[in-house]
Structures are given as structure tokens and as C-alpha cells.
Image 1 (cartoon, rainbow, N blue to C red):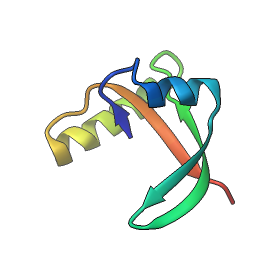
Image 2: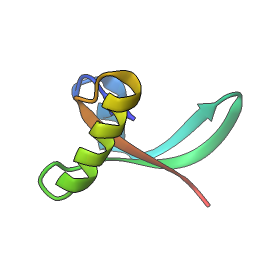
Image 3: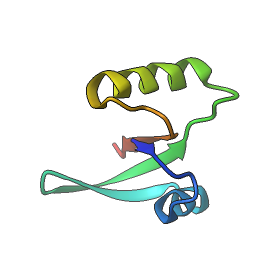
Length: 70
């Protein structure tokens, strides 16, 4: 996911606690979320931004990784 505003409440919540619940197409599941770091993960940031630009026409913002719990 890409957060347009790094100060959004949901981003602040993830900073405080990365344990999240996600709903996609009616399915609800537990997951962990983290903010990608431009300083330590520039290649991943660039890749995700590029994919977002290709699909949606924009890709700037704070990238948030969400991984389902296994």
C-alpha cells in the first residue's frame, strides 16, 4: 500500500503497533504491517513506486508492507 500522507492516522497506528487486521473482498485476516525505509530499502521502494505508477498513474508516498500472519 502507499500512504499519500505520512501523518495519516492509520500510518501513525502502524508506527505504534504493526499488528493489524485487514479486510479484502469480504475476507478478514490478521497481518503485520511495517513502513518501508527509503534509507535501507531504496531498491524495494523504487520497484513498488514504479509498479504503482504503471498501474495507477502515481506512486509517491510512504510505502507500507502488509504480510498475512501464517
